[in-house]
Image 1 (cartoon, rainbow, N blue to C red):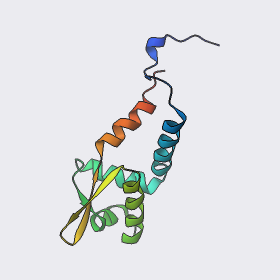
Image 2: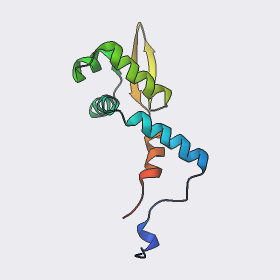
Image 3: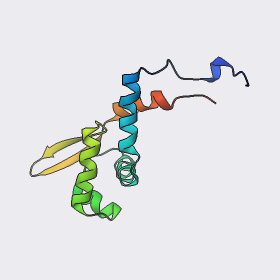
Image 4: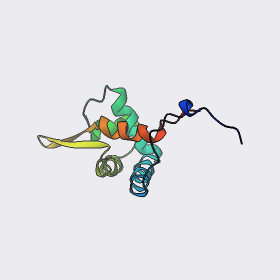
Length: 108
């Protein structure tokens, strides 16, 4: 087995079982292509708040389907749902993605 320079590995410390379960849950939510596409549209617009109708027209899915996926993203803490009058808008939670980077931040 090849020995790697410890400075090449950027992870800070091993995950606890609880942390691993939490991160696995977040990655499960993100593993859906429609959810990733929705997040990419929100992020591509400078993470500005976007409504279900606008997102549905961008991704070509029905509003109920988009609402379902956004609900899953919100339950996971990846987006916030904010009431704005009679509508609900969705915004990315940057801190959630900063936490996910901890797991992905591994050197080669």
